Amino acid sequence: MVEATIVSDPRIMMGKPVVAGTRITVELILEKLGRGESIEALLEAHPHLTREGVLAALRYAARSLRAEVVFPLDARSS
Image 1 (cartoon, rainbow, N blue to C red):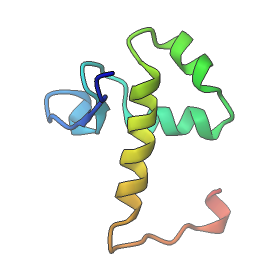
Image 2: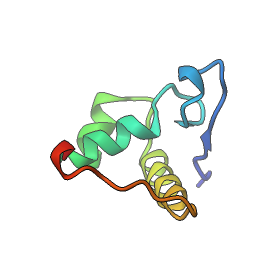
Image 3: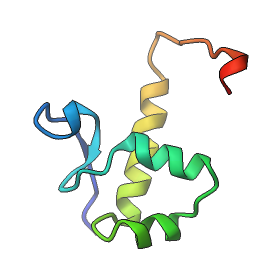
């Protein structure tokens, strides 16, 4: 199995982190999973996306949240 990676290139999706070889952003994956969409539904809707790509996006998001700066959420925006 080849490990899917997350890349950021200013020429692709304005530099947002994407699954390598796609234009599918980590943000899109998180939004869809957060709304309750299954990984299987994501894969069906985005044929270039792999399960490994989805898991790489989740790992990337988890690492990003380990940053020293934490932004509090406004309870009204949830």
